[in-house]
Image 1: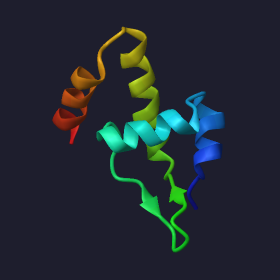
Image 2 (image 1 turned 135 degrees about the horizontal axis):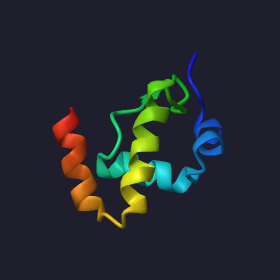
Image 3 (image 1 turned 120 degrees about the vertical axis):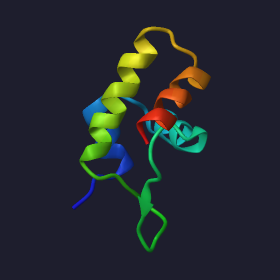
Length: 73
């Protein structure tokens, strides 16, 4: 069973707004949505997001972060 955006925000410290932004910018893999359109994050997204937090803490611009995502996919 997956996690809602609120649960992911609570576990990672990343706001729901930022999570949506990361998804829009292609900084996380495509997030599944249920029949109501609610985002459902699988547990492995927490690892992806923890990595994004580490990259962001280096003041890396989003464009560079996107390159890392592309390389890992």
